[in-house]
Length: 296
Image (cartoon, rainbow, N blue to C red):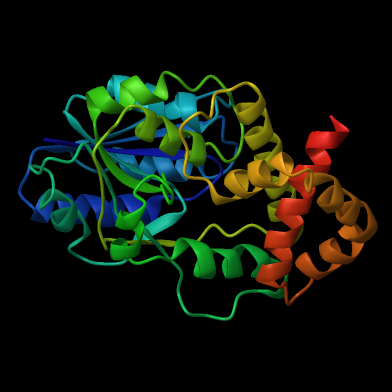
C-alpha cells in the first residue's frame, strides 16, 4: 500500500525512522520503509543499525553522492507499492497521526499530496536565523492558502505521490542542484497533475547557518535563470521569476542590477547577521537575479 522513502546525507535518522515505523505499524497497513545513504560519511553505521532492526525496513548504501533527484528515483525504482511518501532526513512528524492523516487522502482524486512544513517556536542559534526566519515566514503556510495556488509551495520534504506520476515528473529533471522543488512544481503544473495540500506538517530541524543558506539562495537563483533561459520553466508559479520577467519587460532590471552592485555588501551583512530582515532578503533575491542575468 505505502512505500516510505527517505534520502539521507550525513544526518541521523534514528528518531525519524523509529517514529514512522511505529505509526505505520499502528495504522495496520502494508508498508515498507526504504532509506538511501547518498554518499554519506557520517551516521552511516548508526543509521544502518537502526533500520536493520525494524521490520519492513531497508537501507541502501551508495558510495557516491547522487543528489536528491537521482536518489529519489533509486528509491522509487526499488519500492514495491503504488503510493510513495517522501520524507527528508532532517524532519519529524508534527502529529502522532501523521501516517494516518496522509492515508485518509490516498483514495481521493488527487495524485500528489503535500503535508506542509512547520518550525518549532524556539529562538534559533544566532548563526541560523536566516533559514529559520525564512521558513517561519514563507514555508509554514496553512493548507487553505497553499491550495489557492497548489503548485507554488511544493516542499518535497513531506509529500505523498503516485509512483507512476513521480517517475513521469522526476525523469524530466536532469539537473543536480539546490532548489529543484520549484522545477518539480512547475512540471506538476505543466503535466496537469492534481495536487492537494493538507495540514499534516513535519517539523524541519536541519537548519543551515546563515552564510551557507545565503550561498544556497544564490545557487537557486542561478538555477532559476538557467531554467528560464533554456525555456524549461514555461509553466510555473514562482513569484520571484514572475516579478523578474515583468521588470525585464520594462527594462527596470537594469536599475535593480545597479542597486545590487551598490548595496550587496550591506544586504549580505544584514542577512548573515543575527537579525536578518525578510524584506531585505526578498530585495536581495530580486536584485541578484537581475544582476546575474545581465552579468552572464
